[in-house]
Amino acid sequence: MQVQSVFFQQKAREKLGDSNLQRSLGRLANKFVSARANVILEIEDFEGTRNAAVDIRNRAVKSLDVWLEQFESKAKASGATVLYAATPEEARELVLKIARKHAVKTVVKSKSMVTEEIALNKALDKAGIQVRETDLGEYILQINNNEPPSHIIAPVVHKNKEEISELFSKVHGTPAKTDIEEITHEARDILRPQFLQADMGISGGNFVIAETGSVALVTNEGNEGMCTVNPKVHVAITGIEKVVPTLEDFATLLRLLPRSATGQSISNYVSLLTGPKRSGDLDGPDHMYFVLVDGGRSGLLGGEFEEMLRCIRCGACMNHCPVYQKIGGHAYGWVYPGPMGSVLTPSYVGLDNAPDLPQAATLCGECHVVCPVKIPLPELLRKLREQQVERGLRPWKERVGLTLWAWVAKYPAVYRLATRLGVAVLAWMGKRTGSIQTLPLASGWTKGRNFPAPDGQTFHALYKARKR
Image 1: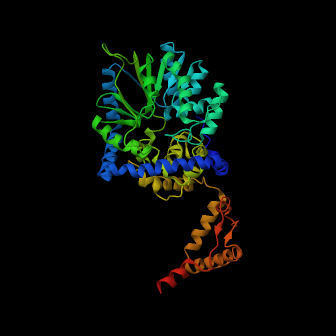
Image 2: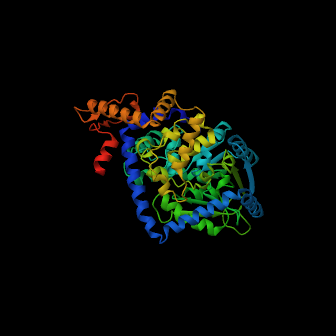
Image 3: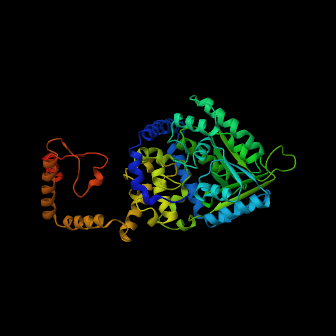
């Protein structure tokens, strides 16, 4: 997926003006946020479970090489092949080599953000291999000119059923349907033959388990099983940081993942896949491969952003983020949106290629509060902002303004005079309507909303009056 994060401000303005998107995002927040709040009450010691999850992920990350070696050993013992890719380019080439080795012509895929990250579908298409997304949301996006996902859990959250109905009618050549069950049944009729005919299945991996050499897949649709069990070749692609030491560790994380993601006690399907089909097995692939992708992850090890490697890709941070709730995922310009994407994208593709993402947050702290593995996202975003200032990557007007403010703030008498003058001017500007439509030298504040006019008193004056 091509990085377009440099266009964040432009895209954010466009999304704010999209009334259909605003309605769709409102439904997401109401559904996932309220559901999570209710379902976490089922865990008697929720904070204790979160602390245990933090310990599990930290243990895996701190000894990542050890657990990956153990995973590789166990996976090979079960008959699977484990391959490592340092870059997206290497990952794509490994998958293409597997496809050529087994004379693959058709591929079915279940949802995987890492395959979005490495732009796998485009590479398969270019090699003449037909690839079909089978997660319903990803399928909708694929037939809509390969549109990128807007959310890591609910990729098509930005569309309503009327838009999907119109798309299905256009692409499938069928009468438009408005009943959700009928729409999903139509998708099933289209996809079922492709499941049965595919030469290779590709999946992601929520976790890979060192103790058993297994990949764990947590989904809500039956397509994952059809992609991993029916084709003769199964390729599981995931990031190197997704390893967990034991099955017991996975069980702990599984208590948090669906609750944090969709507000479910448990997802509809949980699969643990270990090696290819063995003698006596009734189903399963003849060949199983793991492609473990670095793609910038090892660069976070031992650094001030290492805590991001704990992320279990639940999407809770974006569900609760007031910025994401207004602009959706496409404005962020790459695979990972929301607060987690505002840290991961600059970390993986470079701060120069995502200059506005560290600013795409209010630092309200909600993302940290709901993160099941307690990643301090506001703190990490602040660190990225510091790096931008140190490297001179912020606009010159902003740098000059902050330098001037810092100088004034060092001299209390000057600061008090400046604030009295500023408040007086702002009170005069908003005297008639009680709000300011255009804020001098800071128009970004008023492009999307009016600025409340002060009553003419500074904070110091109000504080002194209240203290008295």
